Image 1 (cartoon, rainbow, N blue to C red):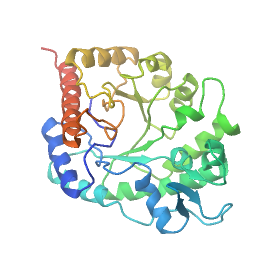
Image 2 (image 1 turned 90 degrees about the vertical axis):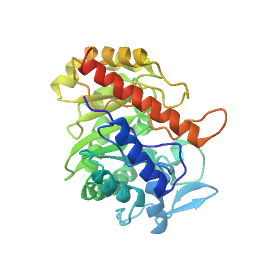
Image 3 (image 1 turned 135 degrees about the vertical axis):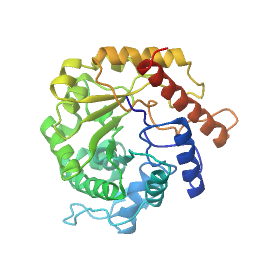
Image 4 (image 1 turned 30 degrees about the vertical axis):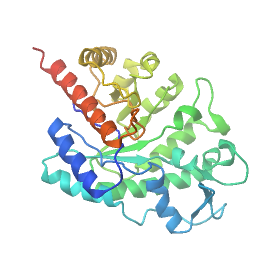
Length: 320
């Protein structure tokens, strides 16, 4: 079992902090580090669209410039922290690198196509628009692959809202969702994963497990233990999927007890009949905060949580 991290950390955005995180993750022994997201996970991928005048910012919100549009959305930019980290991480001896890329559903949910509030006014309510954004995310993943990232992940927190236990919002169909995922990962090498935080429905689990575009499913189990009940080990096996479980809180600044993390991980290993890899915290640590408000204190807690996760994996694989 390898250990990983979803993406964000609570430090300020600076290349020196990216370097610092790389060194600290190496010291912990994290197997598959992501490039550290020290900027908002939506803004990172929206800013190139703003620079091309495809999207504009009004009152702190993203709005489409022209819709319907016959302009292709593609990534023709650079992400400096991703470029720096990929090169520096290799000098530290990391073999695997994870690219956390915000997915088309979530990006679309942050772009307003028309006036009005709520999700129904955003791109996620429009299948055609999300498919356009899927091409954009595909071009971002191609860029990440060229940089040397070999675990290509999309982060889709909005999917937990879009796909309920009985139905999908905005007349989305399961076929449409799969077509979006297929577009995202077309001609992308490496291993493909998806991260969905929060509670997930059995319907969403089934849809993602059945997607031929994905190999790794990353869900949270520490702060959402009810997610254990939606996992179908038979489906994981029949579709050859791996579960990447979050086993420590990414929000609570209390560092988990090693025995607690090990028990949760052992439960998930037994539940999935061993189909577990890329063990991490529930989500990124960008929102982790302490009473003091110190980013450095929050960061040190994040590192301690990752250390506990690494130790839990080591003890399960090499029992005393």
